[in-house]
Amino acid sequence: MSQPSRPFALAIDAMGGDAAPDVVIDGLELAAERHPDARFLLVGDEARVGGALARRKRAAKACSLRHAPDYIPGDMKPTAALRVRGSSMRVAIDAVAGGEASGIVSAGNTGALMALSKIVIKTMREIDRPALAAIGPSARGDVVLLDLGANVQCDARNLVEFAVMGDAFARAVLGLTNPSIGLLNVGSEELKGDDRVRAAAETLRDSHIGANFRGFVEGHDITAGTTDVIVTDGFTGNVALKTGEGALKLMRDLLRQVFTSSVPARLGYLLARPALDRLREWMDPRRYNGAILIGLNGVVVKSHGGTDALGFAHAVDVAMDMVTHGFNERIREGLTRLSTNGPRIAAESH
Image (cartoon, rainbow, N blue to C red; front, side):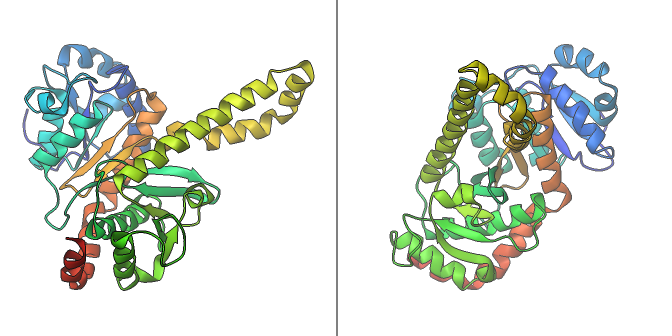
């Protein structure tokens, strides 16, 4: 295949996910309609992908297919995945590392994607550690939460860098001009928390994003939408994410039980159905599909493995927003403006 005249917008792992490649290609069919000028490098087993792609006209027009004979199963350990050089995930990541594509979207093995991305695409020179970020619902609109598990232990420097990356993400993907930022803590008072959290807060108050830093926030502030960006370490962030997912599932189950418990309840459901349909649309997990590993030399978006075409298309939308709005350039700009505080952060963190 000849080299493209310009980089592909995204490399797509066609073989990642529970229902690959069909869900991936159906998602690209939707994404190609939303991004008519985008070009995608679709990577996977040509025998399995080629026929399905030919039946989706918009996706076929937008994609160039590259054969990859292997794929990484969902239960494969990251260390083993590193050795499968012919996998669809690895070939797609290689395309990003080689400058052929600006980013990758995969619904495959999360651990493998994170490990391969860190080793092959590599962390930005200005970043100590990449972070996993995602968008979630709140009472006031969408909220960005990071880190969600990429870094179980973090120091003050990491938290400050996460805040800068979260600020850039909210501007690029949510379109916010001045996103507010909160640092997750056990209380909102300035004296609460450990040394690293207080040191990070002090640095952020004195930084170029200090005007948008709202100080410490608590767990309930995530769903309240107190700030647009919530910053925390990966251990706490992952617990908060899983707790939120569990709470949403419980709410759906309880509503189902309530409205099927009796004949009057079923009648009440019919009356409330328009409002419930709006609620279901607002809380639809497909709207929030796409966790982002930020801080790398390329855009890396992880789609949920069990999503459908609409959910995968949303993950592509997130990646396209990051590519189109120069997400990594925004991070570098923010870190450059923060650089005068660098020595103090390092001294307090280690």
